[in-house]
Length: 347
Ligand SMILES: C[S@@+](CC[C@H](N)C(=O)[O-])C[C@H]1O[C@@H](n2cnc3c(N)ncnc32)[C@H](O)[C@@H]1O
Image (cartoon, rainbow, N blue to C red; front, side):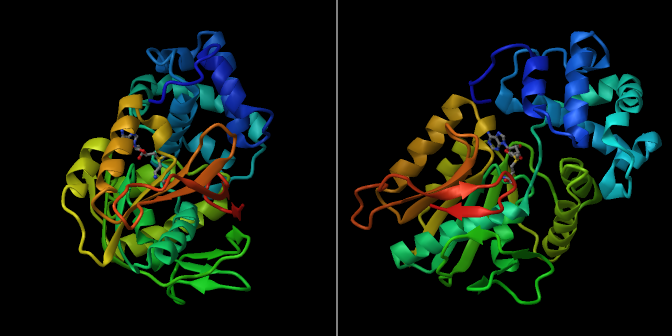
């Protein structure tokens, strides 16, 4: 995990994340923080995670584990609080029911903390698309080898199967089940490309074609984001018809292996990553930086990233290898991105 922001207690970090949000998870994160302070079941579940940094988002791991219990019919009292399951009870009333469920499943919930949130958010494909347009336009190469470290189930590797629409431009198959409308603020030049190869890796890859994988993905979509649940349903339908390969591996080791074999001369390799680097240890980040920089001296490689840096908003950056073999040009910031990929606000 990235080694930043471990100030205060775990409860403080939960409260910071919750802020004064009035949605279900805002209420639950504040109540979980109070319960941790009061040495309730949250303290038992989170034992060993006291010093986890903010970026490890322990609270989201726990809420994902809780949602999994609800989705597998083991917490029927909670269904009325989960809008994606048709619930509409006030979120402020959920905590006593949640506390009881947490207390009944301490061991199982402890195990769910080991896996980083598998929020495979297809809204983030908007950032990838904008980055691909930029790379294809600047490199003059329209064939793309797409590599994604930290891909989760690899849903965003299917970017060319999604439909993007706005009044001034459109991209992707008109009959796609997944439509992203008005997802970019600012001028876009849609530049055609063809993905000739696609592959991802993850420390804990999810198979989107299995019921277990689908349950995992659903449990990490916030239950009151009903539109995102619909988007996931549509993406899973596409993934069933276009399965992608996501290898079980760490980002640096995997990229070293993939980039050791260059693509054909008329293909640009795009290393794409979104909301994964905050979970990487510092040496993983250094290894990825080094391997991409090395590859950029002998291959047409670009790095497209949607990650948090200093600011509270995620940024979309593109770093393209110069055509003369002198290496990466240095990252260009294309814009800001909402947590779930939309909107992308171009600079
Ligand atoms: C929040 S998810 C984001 C998934 C996907 N990139 C997206 O934006 O939809 C973070 C992913 O990073 C993966 N991950 C964390 N550390 C990793 C590492 N060192 N190498 C590869 N994947 C990692 C996690 O398993 C998880 O699937």
